Length: 345
Ligand SMILES: C[S@@+](CC[C@H](N)C(=O)[O-])C[C@H]1O[C@@H](n2cnc3c(N)ncnc32)[C@H](O)[C@@H]1O
Image (cartoon, rainbow, N blue to C red):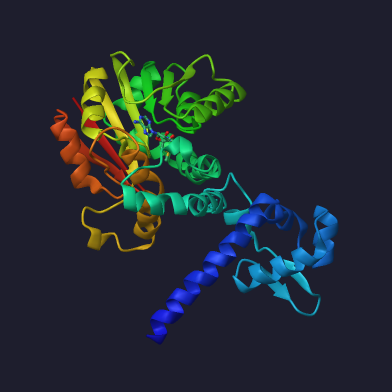
């Protein structure tokens, strides 16, 4: 009993510290500490223009959390370089600060989701706290930057050659457009079209494409399912989006019909094993939680009876794709966080 009570107490302390880590992210404190070297609370206050008394308490919290180190002789706090790579550098492959933004959004929606447990109603992605949209994009961007064009696309049969020649790619559930833009930068002869039901994300994606200088080859439109996307696509992608759709069977069928004869469907899904008992680890805990608060609730808010959930696993995904008429379905690659599935008509 005592051991378990300690586990729960640690979870509660970490949840509280998470709110403080979120504040550090929001106020740019991690970045300030990454650039400052060891500082007292007063020096950090001068550097950031923030209130010293709050900072003193925040610094103590983060030191107790193990995020900062403290030298009692000089009363100075430091963010070690390895910690800065996780908390203060958005371009680092280890960047995780965006996760705290998503968690703030999780808490904001928790009471509505609790109501959903009673009513069965979903909460659409567009109804979530806006911090979810940026938090998720920040969480996934380092993974996409590191792996999308270097590991994931090369793991598909013949797809890179098609994109290098010049292909047409449809990115479904495109969010802020990060995946479309990264692919466009890697394959300058190809064109990309992203769709997403969330208008705010589409506006943001268009803006990002313009800033990246690829808007002439990367377009975005509000849309769900694949009703009016036409045919002949060389590649259709779903980045962390397939399990969000309310009727994945119907959408997979439409994806198959929309592909060119030699085209490919690529699903990038959260990593999961097929059986719950094999997902009882850090990744499973993270994704089951996000799935309950966001993914299942998004699917339940749409027409259709199947909410796959973020931990569907390769077996269930294969079942859906095979039922939709795909003849060749395989796990192309597995990473610690993602499962990349390739399917061909
Ligand atoms: C977790 S976000 C992923 C966004 C983006 N692909 C990324 O990787 O950052 C899931 C996205 O799926 C979108 N989505 C939900 N239902 C959809 C549907 N039926 N058709 C297309 N997109 C959908 C949501 O609006 C949301 O932008």
